[in-house]
Length: 243
Image (cartoon, rainbow, N blue to C red; front, side, top):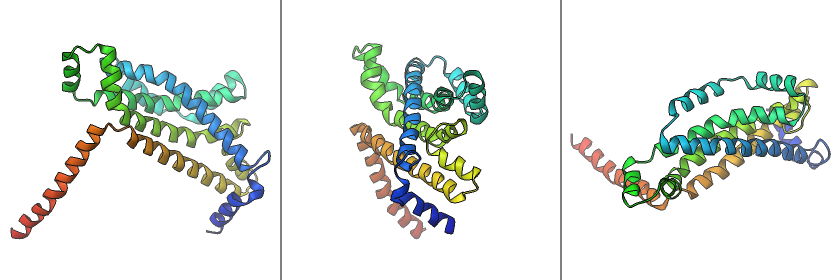
C-alpha cells in the first residue's frame, strides 16, 4: 500500500510533470507511438476488412493469419526488427502495427459479416450498386463492431508501446524500465499506473464513440427488446410463485 501511495504522490507532484523526463513529455511520446502505429494499421486493415466482409472471400485466410499474428511474441519481434534496421522509431512502430492489424481486421470483417443478408438482398433489390451497398448499408450498420475492433487494438497498442523504452526511446515505459533498472519500484509502479490511466481514458472515449455511431433504428430495436424482457420477467416470476 505504501508503494501505491508513493506512486500516486509521484504522479501528482508538479515537479514530475514537465521537463525532459517529465510525465507530460513521456505521455506525448507514448501517444505519438500509438497514433502512428494505429494510423498505419488502419490503412492496412480497412481495405482488407471491407473486401473480406463484403465479398466473403479470403475469410479463412484472414482468420488463420490473425490468429497466427496474435501468437507472435512482441519483444522477440522487436529485437528482430532492431537487428535488421537498428535502434529507432520504426522497429517499434512495425511491431505495434503487426499487433494492431489482427483485431482491426477481425472487427471490420466481422462487423460486415454480422449484417443480416436479407438487408443486403433488399438493398440489391432496390437497385443499389455494390459500392452503394457497402457505403450506405454495410458500413453504417457494421460501424459499432468496427469501433469495437479499433477499441481493442488501441488498448493493446497503448499497453505494448511501453516496449519502446527497451530500445532507448521514450514513452511511459521509460518510468517502468528505469524504475526496474534502479530498483526504484515506486517509479516503476507510477509508470504502470500512468499506462493504466491512459488506457482507461482512451477506452471510455472510444466506448462513447461506439454508442454514438450505433444506428438509431438498431438502438431502438435493442431498447425495445430490453423493455420486452423487463415486462416478461415479473410475469415469469409470478408464474413460478404460483407453481
